[in-house]
Image (tube, rainbow, N blue to C red; front, side):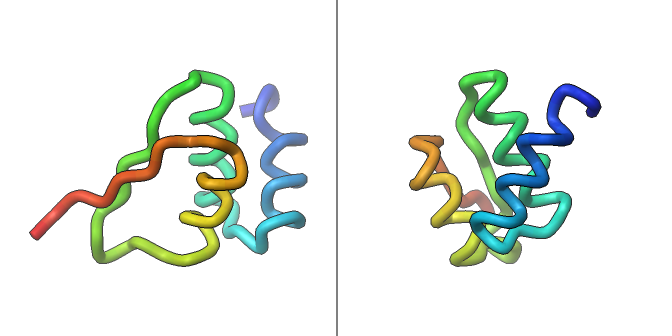
Length: 62
């Protein structure tokens, strides 16, 4: 978590993300991984942050 903290703060400030959203984007950046989000939790801010950071963003669910 300490390795992500600074990046999370910047992401939250730059994109208006919650702590959880910032953590998810920061982790994807570090791990070079895609982000899968339940379709009920899909939101424009986290989607925009993923796009801005070139993170593959997918929604899952029915």
